[in-house]
Image (cartoon, rainbow, N blue to C red; front, side, top):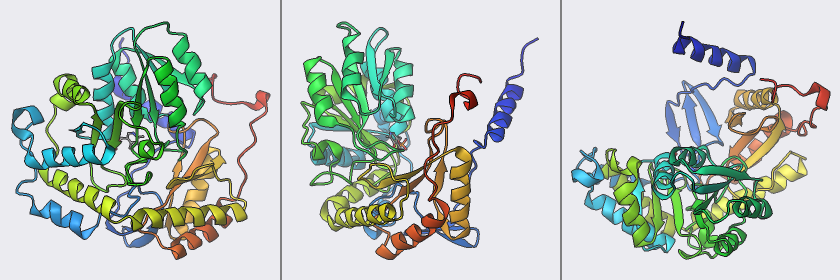
Length: 403
Ligand SMILES: *Cc1c(COP(=O)(O)O)cnc(C)c1O
């Protein structure tokens, strides 16, 4: 007899519950800057990716309201491509110093579409072990051989590329790693790709708006142009405070994606109202440099305070400042303690991060004040000062390999 799929799914859910890995939805009733309300309870949030505080910027909201329609009515290639989309694509290309840009509904779709369009069966896709899930999923969808290298280790990436002979190869990396906050060694990766004739793709979801002299991201900060990083992807849902994503590069790349990227072709274009809002967000991000400076000074303040308290910081200089607590239960307990004190900080557990590397993922925003950061530090001293768990002795090792 066939196994019932829903029964099997329920068994998986129950197994997660036992390992304290169940994910729970929380409904946020209201937002005001860094404050969120869950029911009647007001919490100071340190887990949003709204790094510049643009999601509630009055100009961005006004642009959204001015638009003449909410929905686009169709896919881009039918009649959904509106002047708002075109203007946003142009602004993004100009900001990132690329010939053209192409909008996708989300970062997830952009990565699926780009990898599926560029790669075929038999090609090689080399990726950092800590890349975002959708880059990995995109590689699987493409049919290429996926080889993952040790996090941020250029020598390891080089070995992976060298073993493949001369099949076409793409090296994909996050610009800023979403769960660790560190920045990829982009200059060295670009040199490696040049030497090995591989194509470099950077997913700068967490770098755009935050890094670089003009806020154009980790690739700008590393001084890399379209030649060195021919495929640049970033999202509009993080520092820009909106929703959606884009790929920027040569006119040939963009035209190729438009012809062949299935997640671009077979889906409804994002609301023109959102494109208008995102265009305004780009303008504000470029104009109001103080937001980046402010974020930078909050990051410095947080790191200095956390170091003084001996908190288990990771080496990140970006808005993502995780505290490594080890076991999932430890991270959950810390998050619950913080919530009881009025802070919203999420515990990130496997499988999002490796086993034994559960953490509190603290994110800072230009919407926070110095006092907010100081209050968080005080609370963290009470709930998150445990050092990272030592690796378990081999004979006590549970889980991996036994499941
Ligand atoms: C958030 C994120 C994505 C997905 O973008 P969405 O627009 O949320 O789908 C892709 N890559 C990285 C590195 C991300 O952090």
